[in-house]
Length: 210
Image (cartoon, rainbow, N blue to C red; front, side, top):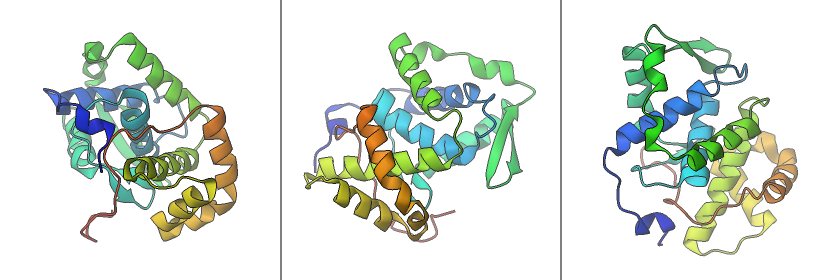
């Protein structure tokens, strides 16, 4: 299985660059009342796999709520809290972000990304600005299973994509009636994967899913 990521070398300072990317997503979403850590994780995946497509050592695995890169996200959350860029407080099903004491330091270093890349990010974030975490969860998971099939060179039909989505995790069944509309939206907005990135697979350890 060869993906487009295999043609890219791992970038220097990849964790720092990805930290800037993740911080940008949060800063652009602070005025989004529906934004929290679950929504953040799905926007980060779509930023990596759809908008930016650069080798930052991504390692997404299947979590109940969709693609999740715990190897990056856990230390990232610790760093932004320890540096007091943001605070994270539990609200409902998510942790929400608010500016911390040193928030102004989080707005620097965007030279890692071009204006074109930031425009793509802004457009992506705007797509889901008024939705709760469910819509980006649905779209990111559909995108992942679709992209998996491209990398694996498997047959792609709406029925296979919906089947893969429902097989992702038992909790996905609650979205069964929303999948046709989501796929139509993805096609209309040209939200179509091209095989970039690694296959997003189930974690080997059951201890992983938090």
